[in-house]
Amino acid sequence: MARSSMAAVLAVLAVAALRCAPAAAELPLVEHPAKNDGSLSLLVIGDWGRNGTYNQSRVADQMGKVGERLDIDFVVSTGDNFYEDGLTGVHDQQFEESFTNIYTAQSLQKPWYLVLGNHDYRGNALAQLDPVMRKLDERFVCMRSFIVNAEIVEFFFIDTTPFQLKYWTHPKDSHYDWRGVAPRENYIANLLKDLDEAMKKSTAKWKIAIGHHTIRSVSDHGDTKELLQLLLPVLKVIHK
Ligand SMILES: *[C@@H]1O[C@H](CO)[C@@H](O)[C@H](O)[C@H]1NC(C)=O
Ligand SMILES: *[C@@H]1O[C@H](CO)[C@@H](O)[C@H](O)[C@H]1NC(C)=O
Image (cartoon, rainbow, N blue to C red; front, top):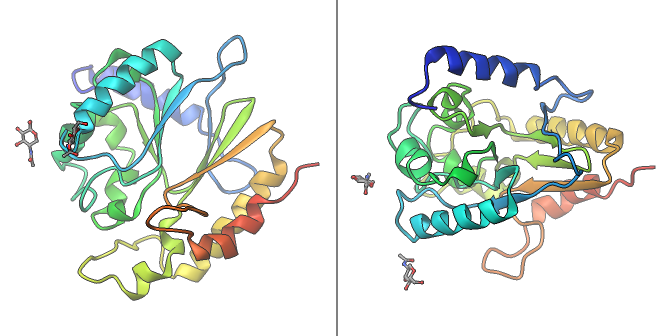
């Protein structure tokens, strides 16, 4: 999109705005219809923005090939989009160097739906959320918590970083950008309420929750106890 005319950019933004009607709850809703045969294909990636190093470029190449074979509809990113400390602002070169110039395969020129990870919060978290990023690369659709409705499946993107108490109480050498989040308790209460309403209202056959932190994990980080306590009960609501 970087080399397209401004008119094209504005047209795309206008379409994006139309397709982004508010849900009954307050979570933004993006409609992304499935293919004509009702199917949907996507790739999921997280922890990636490394200016091509740490084998990011090699993974990107393989994503391009697999993406073509599967004829993917979109890409999901589970956060930690830019290491080590997110973006410094909307004009950070890393956006191009770690995203636009890396995922160049034709098959990856689809919407990317992204949430933030803890490393993204260590920079200017508002930058990635700024719709101006879509002028730089129209694929980049990053919000805190939102819904993508793809007919047979609804994806609930959840901002999990604010849940983890340790980032608030023991930030160590890192600074977390809590603008628009603090105070934590209110933010979480509102988010869970919106999510609960949206989940109960959803008629999609499949509901998939997406977030940066694991609820349960046998790997290094282990379970996230705040998510077990606060988020899991909301996800367990059964739709009638
Ligand atoms: C990122 O990679 C590009 C291309 O390899 C290089 O020119 C640039 O200096 C790198 N940027 C950083 C911050 O390392
Ligand atoms: C990149 O991948 C190669 C081959 O799998 C591996 O040997 C190497 O350690 C990786 N490099 C990094 C920086 O992770």
